[in-house]
Image (spheres, rainbow, N blue to C red):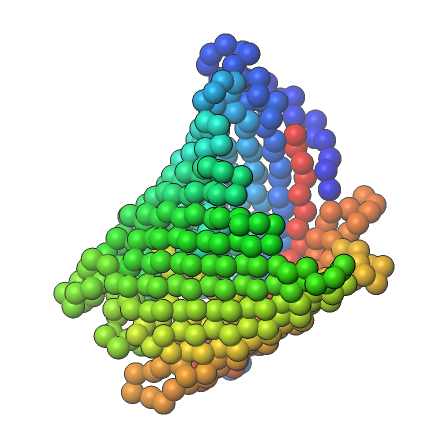
Length: 444
């Protein structure tokens, strides 16, 4: 919902006083700016089903409020325009004391092992634009096949670095950049970069890629990324939507990743020093993986039926950028895999995963704003050192509703429920529930 806030004149006046230069040069900087306050109330419950979970507890149970103040300026006048964005976040604990908390869930650790009562961050991004090319430097939240900011808890994961985006043609977009630090979703401090299980920090993640919109139905993608002393990764993607008849479409989504050891991860000495990947590997700790996935989705009316298959090669687990462990809630990362779910990601060495999901948009039944889906993921052939191949499955239920009218218009309510049963000892049996309430107040 959009509401005009009385603070707009004060914010704009303050911003104008901070600018140096002729007033006309900053007309678009101010007029094209916008700001919003995003509020999130979030409850998280993970039940390890009588098993000993992280730090010994059998349950994680936390509840909190998240506030995200997102301010974005326009650009100064002229062929080369400059702008400034700011992201201020605050997490407030409502429940989740010692015995129900771990640092990577929603809040940083306090001295007694419980969650802190609150934590906050401020991120600033400087930006410049020339024609169809934009450069951003500072706090970033990328959504790319080779790097995705995780937003699965109270506050989002952020990165520090620079990213250039250029729309060379109407059909071709080029992207490149470099990331040197990350702030975990439950942390206040910047941390170096690593992979799951990595004990040594890297401060150099570079990437480049291209999105080619061949036509309205077909998108082709290629990206290359390198995390210094850990891995080189290539990605190829194809997305095609075929309109069958009016109101019916068939979508194909193909993804392929090739990931190889880089720098110190490629040597026994480097892996022993901490540049290593967790999980099974033909050479323990060495990154050597090919992963492909295919998804087919049929849409008709409010119904959507998706089925797919994913194959992870046996050389090592699939990996993408994570944070080095700082002990301050730095854990938690996303991957661009269709199997990156609520509890498991189905990315272990050798794992073959068949999956499907049914979704329904109730607008087709006269209930706009209500959507629901149920998905099932079944992984087999998981490689384990000194043990038979394992398997796992996860069932997910998702229900979302956005109020469409009245004084609560725009208020979002969401339920996520997942059940995991795994033959991998570190996962075992888990039941997870997430409840969320979101609201966005437009400030100007």
